[in-house]
Every structure is written in structure tokens, then in C-alpha cells.
Image (cartoon, rainbow over all chains, first blue to last red; front, side, top):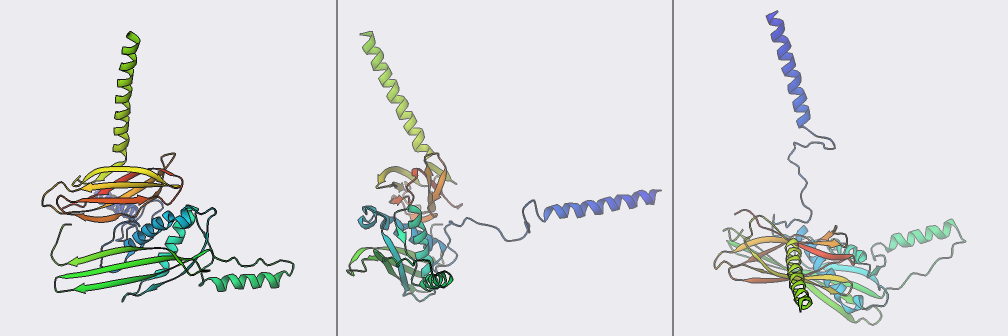
Length: 205
Length: 122
């Protein structure tokens, strides 16, 4: 009888431990809650390395969008101008996805409702393929002429790096230009400067 | 005479109430996470075309201490709902230095703002 009680007690303990460990591995709507992977703030200031990172991308897009929205060619326009994004050249020694910068600026400008965008030169093949498909599918469709852009946006990303045994200094300069494609005149230009210093001795933070 | 006194009293009370309300509103527009190691000296907003623009001044009142922190501006619409945020912007401010920052909302429906300052644990 005593052995039976001990056996039932240990079985109960075993089952409860299984149940408890089952609860710990995940709650409702969660998988792998006890793992080392955590979701962070996407807009957090990231200082993992001195390379061009998410914070630099976000702050660049923010500053240049604000500046562009303030420019009289956008702010004082009677109707939202039609803009086409051209490429932003990466003149640094590291790989920077410059399209990520322009895409972010485009999203912000579109949300503002002050600017209309035409398909990028990179996506024009897709647009033309769709137009060809529409024409071959139904000949009744009258094809609209492609719209000309009022302005184009181009730019450059540059960096200057200096380092000694103790300090590594990186300076990024992202510049954008708004150009009238008819006259070739540069109507607006602005830049975002970023300095990042990696130091072996702790200063400040 | 009595009427003039009453009018004067109500005017004084009214302006005091307005001042108090204004003070509350300014306080609601500031939020510190962690210790208040930097002073948000002043901040004001004005309309720039269709967009709300905010200018703020931070000051490090300490003589020698260097402070590093991040700030973010939350953009609120007419209903008081956060519709957009700036990325967390880092800045380092040395002793007795003042830093001026200007930010503009990218959406025309933004009518109010809140400045959030976060200081890391030392």
C-alpha cells in the first residue's frame, strides 16, 4: 500500500513537471518564447558597429524628407508634383543599399500627400511588360501615354574614415538633389551628416 | 464698483487657470525614461505649411559630466492618438552645453507632439 502511494506520488510529480515545462516553452500566440530571440524596437538607436546601420538609414530619410517637404518646389506647388527617383550612388568603401534610403524617403513623401511618384527606372521593365501584356490580351484597351516627371531625385553617399590605435572615426555624408529634367537645373539640394566614433576607452555612455 | 471688482477677480482667476492649464499641457509633452540628467529647457511648436514643426532645446546643467542619451518625438493627431514617431535620435551633450533640435512631422494630420527622452543606466 505504501509503495503504491509512493508510486502514485512520483507519477503525479512527473506529470506536473511535464505540464509546467510545457507551459514555460510558450504562451498563447507565441512559439519559442523561452529562446534567446527577442523582438526589439525597430526605431531604436543602434550602435553595434560604426558601419552604416538602421539608425543612420532612418535618420537620413527623416531629415531629408523634412527638408524636401519644406522646399518651395514641393510646399508651394499648386498640385503635388510628379517625381521619379533615380539612383543614389554609393561612393563609400562599404556596401550600402542606397535604394533602401530612397525607398524610405519615397514612403514618407507619399504619406505626406505632397508628392506623386512615377515608377523607378529599375521597375520600368516591369511596367512596360504589364503594358505589353494588356495590349496583347485585349486590343480594345487604349493605352495611356506614360507621364513625364516634373522632377527627378538623385544623390550620393560618401564616407571618410580615419583610425588610429585607440579611435576609429567614420563620417558619412548623404546628399540628395531635386532636378528639373527639362532644364537640368538643380532646384533643391540638402545633405545629412553622420559622425560615428568607436573608442576603446569609455567616454560618456 | 462691485461689478468692476468681480470682473477683475474673475479675470485674474481666469488667467491663473489658463496658466495652470498651459503648464499641464507643456508637462504632458515631455516624458523622461530613466533619470532626468538633462534639462529639456524649452520646446515650442508652430505650423510650417501643412505640417507641425517642433523646436526644442536641451541643456546639460552639470559643469563636467558628459551625458549621452536618445530622444524621440511622438506625433499625435487631433484625437490624441500617436500616428507617427521619429527614430530614436542619439546625442551627446557635454557640461554647460545647449543643443537645439528641430523636427517636422511628415503627415498633415499631426496636431500635437510629445518629446520622449531616454537615458541609459550609468
